[in-house]
Amino acid sequence: MHHKTHQQTAILQVLENLGRPVTPQELLQTVRKKSPGIGLATVYRALKRLTGSGEVRKIEVAGLSPHYEHVSRHHHHFFLCKQCRHLFTLIGCVRGVNEMAPAGFQVESHEIILYGNCPDCLAA
Ligand SMILES: [Zn+2]
Ligand SMILES: [Zn+2]
Image 1: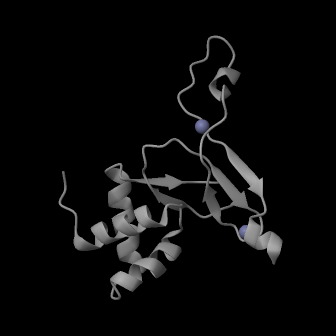
Image 2 (image 1 turned 135 degrees about the vertical axis):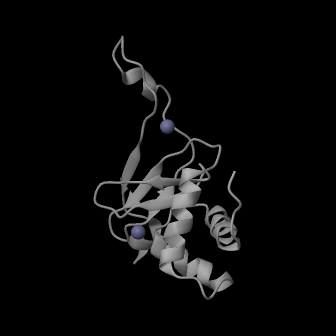
């Protein structure tokens, strides 16, 4: 177990409080409110470390730069807004999704992404 630096702890806390996936750039903006001196390279380094230790998950969606989220124990999926390109965390899953695999296949995981427009973009 590696000792976490103050900056890694701050980054992990910010990710937990945000409760949604963010890009390193978005994360930097929020972390800077707490740690003004922090730079993007430090954020990337911390994310690499925290992803390696299993505390942060990297989310890769086609056409979107990688996002990072705090690993929670709740299984969930995402909604991608086509206009603002924000990823929103959804609650719950689809019943029976793993049963879609034909007999003889063993499912280990699945990903579901809903695409559309978020309320803010619809109102704009
Ligand atoms: Zn939107
Ligand atoms: Zn699911």
